[in-house]
Length: 196
Ligand code: HEC
Ligand code: HEC
Image (cartoon, rainbow, N blue to C red; front, side, top):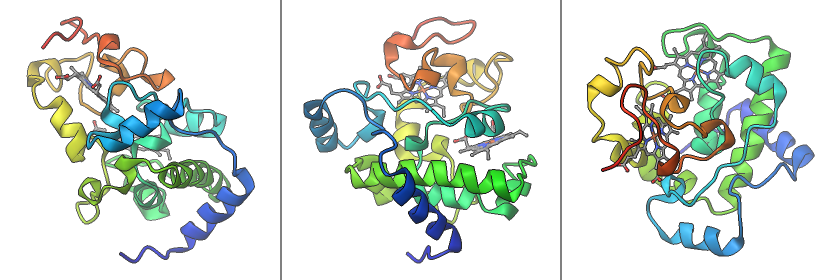
């Protein structure tokens, strides 16, 4: 793994200057330790991700889809997504930013996820969750995510005008913006709660 791109320097600076930007996991230590022991990592229903607290990020990255919590992808993945060339061809869209905005957002995303990895987030550290080499990384293509969503029929996703794709987390997870993906908060448009 060789990710020594300049952007990582920005992340490091961000980490140093933002040092204390919150823990991505809520609640108490005991709960976190329990999560670490389980392979499902952040996908566990007891895990609540930290809310997005950066207004610039929310504004620039939350208009076409929700502003995904930094903890949803490892830092290398955010670094890849935030490359200028990648932003210009962002999953088929143009999400280009000025250098100033890009640096601010990169710092925010990197600082949080590096912090998260250091806290022992099993998701960020699991190599099986790496999507490198398959185009831009996706939350929705990681093994943990797929396992949790493989029973939902297409008619409730792609063929559902109120959802469109699994990338629209908040269409079904009504508390997604609060970092709460608990099954009890699921309400799929045209279907309702999920009882499997
Ligand atoms: C102009 C609209 C637009 C903007 C602005 C935008 N995105 Fe996206 N983004 C998209 C589209 C379209 C997709 C693909 C969604 C799909 O497949 O349904 C996407 C997908 C993603 C994904 C992958 C989601 C998945 O499927 O797992 C990530 C991560 C992401 N965007 C991050 C960002 C970040 C970070 C920013 C801000 C720098 C940003 N986006 C700004 C349109 C946008
Ligand atoms: C079409 C609706 C839909 C969309 C869109 C969707 N999910 Fe889900 N999600 C579900 C359902 C249904 C489950 C429960 C699956 C099960 O338990 O069988 C689930 C489960 C989860 C879980 C595990 C929760 C638990 O209690 O175990 C997490 C975490 C999660 N989703 C995150 C996300 C994220 C992040 C996104 C966006 C990138 C997303 N989901 C998009 C429907 C959706």
